[in-house]
Image (tube, rainbow, N blue to C red; front, side, top):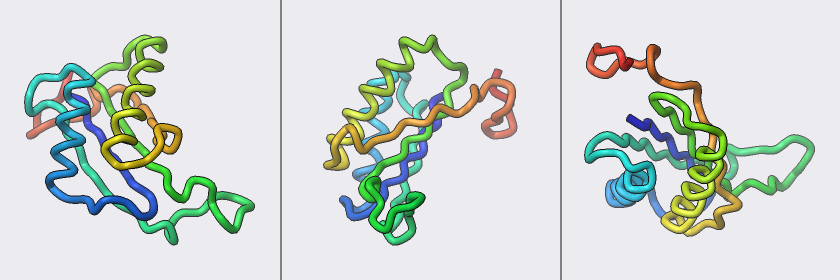
Length: 121
């Protein structure tokens, strides 16, 4: 089930169907999810639409934010490994350093997300 939203800040490869499929495939493999069960939405944000407090030139102007909603959250040690691997993979595919990829875990989706009107348990 993982729902993944990727937001690329600043100049990057264009957000194309090919790039989105490449990210979805690589992340699906990493998360060991069956075909068609890792959903990825990709957006780009111009660096001019990104700011950090008290700086004229944001350090993170080339950041990538990856927001993930799992059915349920794994143990912290597993999330730590997963976040590291996701940062490496997304960075490689998007031509950014893994240190520029920030992973945000949303609360578990079970009991609060419905696909096609069917609540995920």
